[in-house]
Image (cartoon, rainbow, N blue to C red; front, side, top):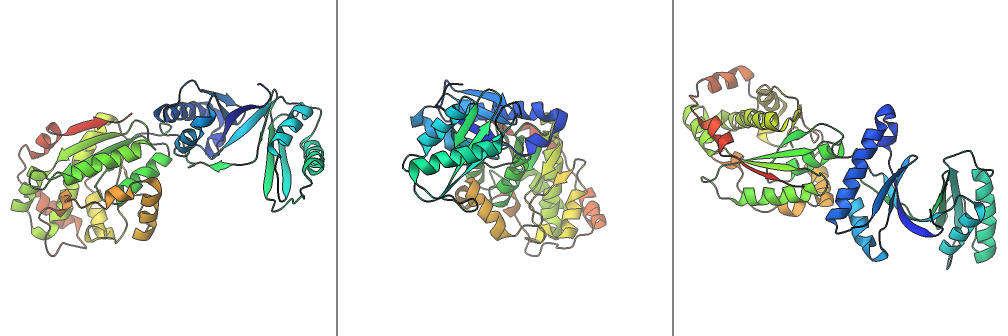
Length: 389
């Protein structure tokens, strides 16, 4: 490590708790960081695993805004910082601190840590000595509780890192560290947020959008493609399947009671989503349902739909209200797309008085009377697949 070399120091939280599996999580995080930086147009950088942290070097000063924006969307990163890399020697560390202290105003404190106990000096030695040096050089006041500036020093065996600002990352687990999930994806606000939460737990995303074209327009498909592009920034390897549901819906409309129509649509979607899950080796389904938000999302109706599944159905938004969900959608960059007008498949021939407290026995009886032909198989055959890096 060269004295005064500039680099990015990346910290993680959950990954550090993975015991013997930690190297696997670290390797996945490194791969995702490399992909994010390449997408941002960076080249000739290096990502190195250190003790309990990662180091990104070779980022040019003019590339900092792009690098910072990219790292802010890599799950698994708790925080990162632009650091001065020095030798693990008091004089070298002192020089880097003084360089950062130029023009210092207000109060300060020193926060030094050693990852190794092999050095002759302790963390407290560094805190005291560097505090005296900065005080003498700048005349700034010391405040150990609420300083205007904190000088962070992290000392490893063969090098040290000096910086004054931590930038928060999104946290969570690196995408690819957990199993793939299939998200039943509308073009509305909720399901993209549900997908984002599962990506935060390390799950690669397969998005399945059911549409009623040509009985409705193509706007929902266009919107979902844009939502998939927004999510793939957070979730590398995102896939999108556009499944035509119109013929299945026509069969349900003509052969089942109107009040059960939406629930039967959703049970058909569950079965078709499981066929996609089998193709993609996904281990669970995900929906954006929030308990009680609409008629189909009462506990009774959720239970009736759930009974059609053989895979687990994850509902990360079950206890959230619309205000909370909307706030996340705005934060992650999906809200503006989600509020575009579009007819989704569940708006096709919706009854005036849908059932709100369905009994499974009644749903299954109604479903049993539907004479499906090739509609379900044809829906899969005519599905369009899009893969995003």
